[in-house]
View 1 (spheres, rainbow, N blue to C red):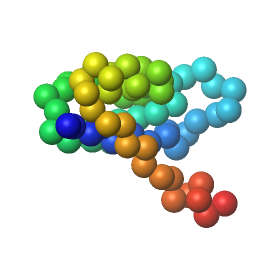
View 2: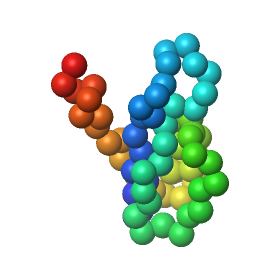
View 3: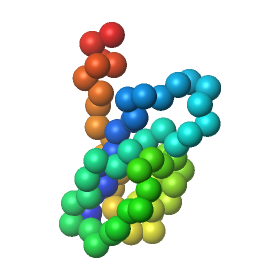
Amino acid sequence: MGKIFVRERTKFGEKEKKPRFTIVGVYELKLKIFKDHMRKKELEQIAEATGAELVFLKDEKKDKE
């Protein structure tokens, strides 16, 4: 089973309507991604279709606040 590692974008406003997540890496999957930022729903659909697990990385800056 492969893994898709994602994190929230660092420059993201609360009222922004842009996709919120960026893919950091992919492990053991033959998968090409052509977007810089994606919505959580899109990531979940890709993970379901490929049988991959989504791993959300923690943001150290947010944890310190």
